[in-house]
Image (cartoon, rainbow, N blue to C red; front, side):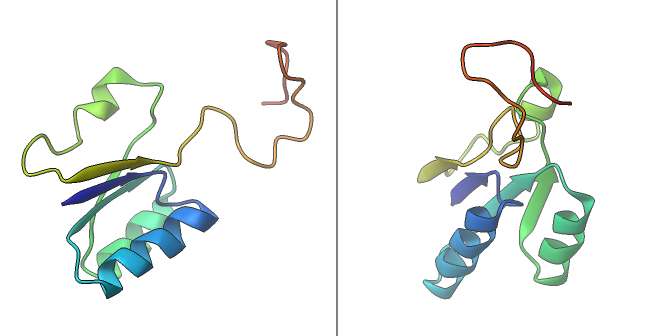
Length: 91
């Protein structure tokens, strides 16, 4: 099984699609409820996971893992107000 953390992102969605097309078993994660509906409709295992919350990480599978792909981040990709090295950024 391949675990894709951040499967609700643009790249994550395409990666999961490609892995499924290759016949791989995938466990997808993301924060979006829309992604949860999308993956449920495709019968792909999915969990809502915020990587900043330890209890969310407990939702990840722990056995039969071939690879983990980390595409998630603590900041949204479109957070244009972020200044690297600063703790001040748009919420």
